[in-house]
Length: 357
Ligand code: GDP
Image (cartoon, rainbow, N blue to C red):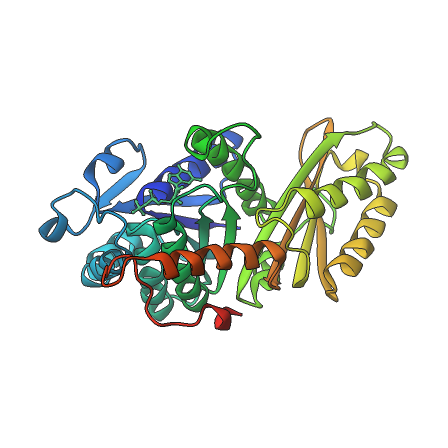
């Protein structure tokens, strides 16, 4: 799937760069353009992709300090300039735009939904948000910001692909220590998802098409994904169980939004050497995904890759409220309740988080 990525805020810029680098190094060509917008000059200086500083007149290049209302206002005020920059990159080949942002901060958290709204007014292609949720140990301002932003992001984007910062973190690592590694994990997994929708010449009909990703995300709301790999035999016939257990592993333990299993639609992509992919294994794995997600819309396909390993990539669209999402919303509510009275930056608008879904 040919995409343009736009990172908003610090996390957004770093993850966008990691994704663009992965796509480039692998030679996939799914990422057609990558661009970062921020209110903080120093964050942009660390990036090698094209960047744009916004809100200079209001925050003088120093960032919005976690104030996501200010982040949203700046994006709205400067949307013409941002849209001009983006317009040069969103060519007719582009099939979707991904806005990438950490939802716990200020610039990305407020700016991403504001930008999604603008983009949706102008472009026909789907506008997705790749949203990063704060991990359990992050402070209450992050939780509160993310709770409020999530609601708006879900409303303004065609789908919000969510990644919990705890999901792919290695044990024993603090969130901060782990950022670089988490970003690599995000880049590899989301990068493969985007690339899986790229046509591969000379391979059979089961190859995934961009439209299958788009259709899986068509339900809107929240989406999440998981990926697991394992050694595989050279003989496809011996890989039936490998494929079914990889699929279980991806869906049950490796999701970007842990415990999210019920969904309106799913896509199962088996990546690897076509000679090692067992059709029977794929069929069984797909049936299992249908049962597990409760969805009758389970799409599937292969992603031919020169590797001795096989990988299972699961994308869920229209994810139901899971225990993990409940837990996150609970943290966001607590952060709201504990916010100092009158602190405009920390207090939620009087919105009900429960009507998110
Ligand atoms: P902004 O620049 O105001 O949009 O704020 P940030 O992008 O720093 O957003 C803060 C949130 O993003 C927090 O929940 C952080 O944990 C998270 N975050 C910051 N940097 C990174 C990063 O490099 N990777 C990941 N995965 N999360 C990050």
